[in-house]
Image (cartoon, rainbow, N blue to C red; front, side, top):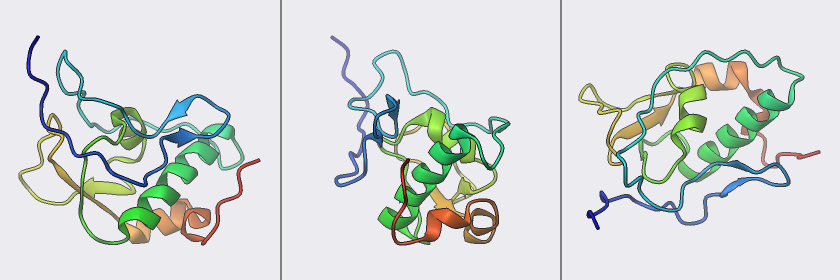
Length: 126
């Protein structure tokens, strides 16, 4: 069996959106290769279920890492990609979209504009 790449597991980070099956983290490194983090167009309207999931994920990111750079680690690539290039940015110019060790940072100005509810102390899940 091939050795899996090193991957930081963010302890205390929610594994997903309750009652939806939508994951925020992955359990183990992908044996077929690291899924790239890339900009994915977002079509969700502010009142949609998809927007609520993105807001919940950003809430978890903000309350875990704040304005500090953070390692991609076991954060789900699909969830990150929906915020990538807008609310979540590479933390350095040498960003590798295929590395679990790549550093990211929240663009607080853009994130607060697009998801103000993510910065509240509590996030209501209906």
